[in-house]
Length: 437
Image: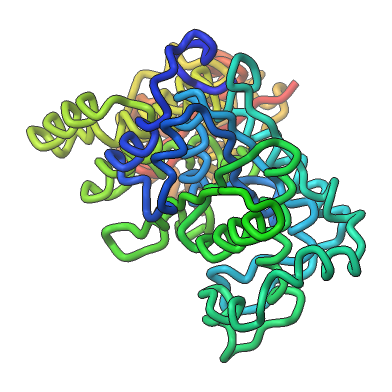
């Protein structure tokens, strides 16, 4: 269930016109079609966002339209998260300089399943505005070519399609007919959801504007109906980088791709110039609460209260409160020299994913394992002689306590919860020994 701060069904839904005001106040509106506010004044609306299954996980750069859907749901609208089991076979050229690789159908299906699981962290699937996750492969894969050309293709001219930025930007480098036709396939999605789910609004990133308006055009021509679009900004950091990118690549929601510890640290380390906007984007905190923490930030920037609030809030939503507690405890150990004695096995599991870890047979400690041997085994020293010199200079610590005795041995008494010993060299270099049964 998502971290709403209470069951969604118990919320008092404000009038839908407040949706646009709320999103604008949080800088979440890049553009919207004329008449959307008028439509929202008539009552709740069903809206969808599409997600491209090029991977089995969302990354943080794809969360802005998810948050727009979540806000819509909190105000009584009905959200549809549409995963692209069909469109993923075509490939969206929007924002891409080259043709996407064609994925096997089996890979697309596995990716669709992964995205579906993650979207359930942000949307509520119970109550009066229950969300739905749908897969456009259900209607696109059986669709016949002749039927598609007759009922969809005939409503668009080549000139209209060439004016779309997703096509125009690729004319020099080249675009295949497959990707050229993508906007028509996405337009068909909007038409299909309009017909079958009374979906009147499509939302997405600002690079989707051309695809969204093509769907509005198709609905108008085939159904003489009114539909709307709203796009959120594509966020670039104050440093000029693409948001959600690190030296290791994308920051993913899947803990197997980006560990919860690294996920937490990503948010904790965002630029001071970006943090207020990110709090507006990615949390449900009231604006006055955000302003309050920004005043704390201005008074004591080194404490980073805004980043800490941001990291805790979104990591809790994605990975859960218990994981956040372990991650913050592990972070305090590595960066604050926190006492290890009350750290549980879960904290050491987090640490094992972030520092070099070596396993030892439990029997290795029975007679006492020389610390110099342990330091070499853990990779903190290149040789026993180097380890001895370091111990003599009190450059090493065992479980947070400095060691000056070169004859020091590790025994079962040194094992912390889960059979771990944390070794440290200097202030920043750590290694973990785990005694296995």
